[in-house]
Image (cartoon, rainbow, N blue to C red; front, side):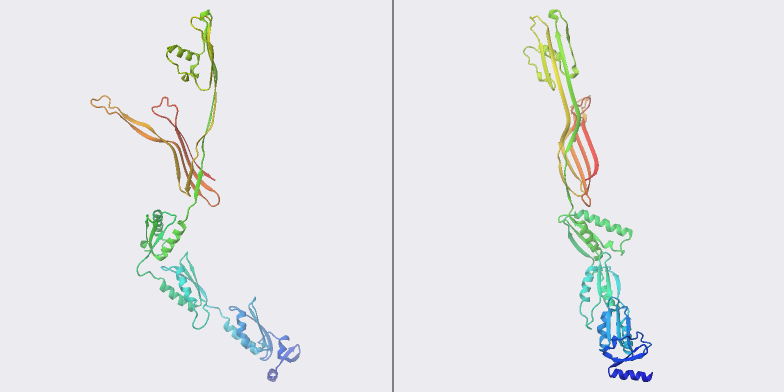
Length: 465
């Protein structure tokens, strides 16, 4: 074996290599040696034997190792990477392949890069990351690339830190110095509102954070005790005094509540439907044949209106110089009369007949056509009518001596049309609407009543449109 190794060394000096194929050893130029089959096991071959070895890379990129290892491989050798499987193929003499594998094993080590989550108590995570990114992106003195990565989680007010352990330690120290309370106390901000009401919003914010303190949600025991908010009604602004972490939460809540609300236009038609039909047809007559010794008779229906008897009585009660108001004797509808009334000196039979015809149908009546504009989830009302006085009491001072000062107490009540709506706009094209409607009027007849009688019709419903 010693002589054979010496022989292989002489071949290498002269630019040749021994390639074993079965029981035959071929001597070929080393420039074309990689085209011949060779062993893939570096342990069972001599130091100057030609071998081809495949190395699996675990923690670094195989493509990045090729430029580093290429100067270590002679011109006749072969070194290539397969990025898809992250492997390196080496074809060279056994001693050199072992040396390259040893170098790869020292480079292919697991990185100490990890991701840390650092919670902040006073500083804002987004502001802190913005400052630290400026420092992290600065070029290093040793010329190496900075691998530190930073991210902010606004929901938990935390900083996500990635990179090697040394860089993470340096950034953690900077975060500890930045996450400290302000020397001059808590921060104050003035927030001008565009749509929300400052007074109502300030009360809701106080209630919200007070409830958090009661149930122990706050991270610090004195967080809500340092919180104060009040409203300036003239400028529709709120003034907030709170720690930075709570201040960010408050500003986020205000951003979501101070939005423009949708408006709703309601055009309504209030119609009264009446099923009232009137039909009247009748004849009243009277005959007087006493002058000729004949029969006399008449019909009388006083409940249906003025007839022959009523008209005759009114004519007999009136004097010759008194005019009779015929409009008060003739009812609604059509009234036709026929008859013969001779003078008292004339003979003959007197007769008279009155025909009355009336038909009425009451169908619908448009009471009002109101139009109301209101915002989402805000109640709007409309009232069209008049105030009617009702007697609620009286005093006459009867049975006493001295001056009498009678008086009455009167209460006025709205009579007319009242409409109240509360819209709720849902996502999409649907809208939930609460409707309250009242229609009242004075009854035409108040027979048997002490005072006026009012008719009232109300409806309360909820619809989706």
